[in-house]
Length: 311
Image (cartoon, rainbow, N blue to C red; front, side, top):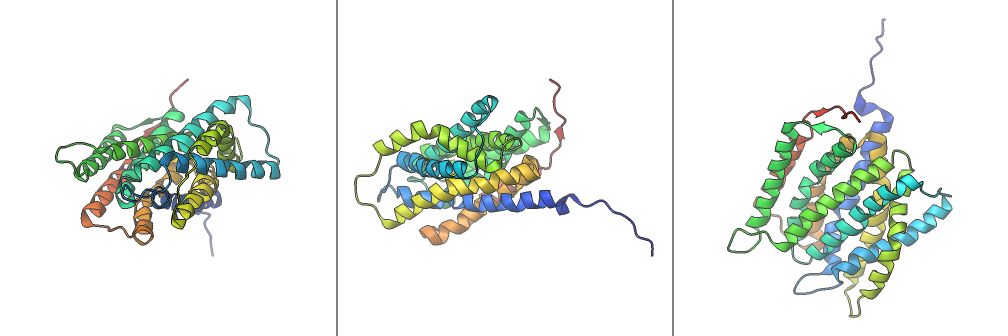
């Protein structure tokens, strides 16, 4: 019997498949960040830790774990040309995203915030295209604009104000998405020439001279619920550290554009975790907006991207 050699489909390629699985693991860990942050900071009526302490305190814990990991793996020092990308990565995922979300989560529910997270895949793809000097098609930008408009429309609708205004917490969440996209993009690029686990570790370590004194200054002085400490511990170990091990390794193995598509499930996972953890309610309007945002992301991710621009 004659046999025909067939090209292995891309989705069966072992490195790409492993990259997708690791990316999904990272997204699953990240999806619990907002509910756990909500546990840590509390609500307006029952505040717990300050948003600044949750954001930077978790970075300190993760940095200490990173130092031990870097020593154990005999990690080489970053090259001089890697210091600026590492600083940008730290600015996005060590400072920007944690600070903005930690402050915002006291004022909005995690289910609400999960809808805002829906624009993150398009934002990440846009940053990745710019870093690789590519030009997404007009269709991509139209989808990005529509997705952003849906998110802003949802935020305004649920702002609770009588006028058409955006709640400050929603503005912080949108800023957090921009910071995360930049941090993901630069971190993924660094993962092409550094061990993926070392990228987040070095980003945390170089941020330590700032995160340590600020976290000590904002250390909570009043009694806290046990659940607040559990939420803080999760964000420190999983959201700020181990999640990036899987995420950056997945991006490096499977490619930023391809693996970033698994972020499509993050809003729904976030909602799924928020309901039992926080007792929040998922209504049809929230679910409808989430589906609409994800639909625009799904279409936008399939729009053509032109080849790299010449130097």
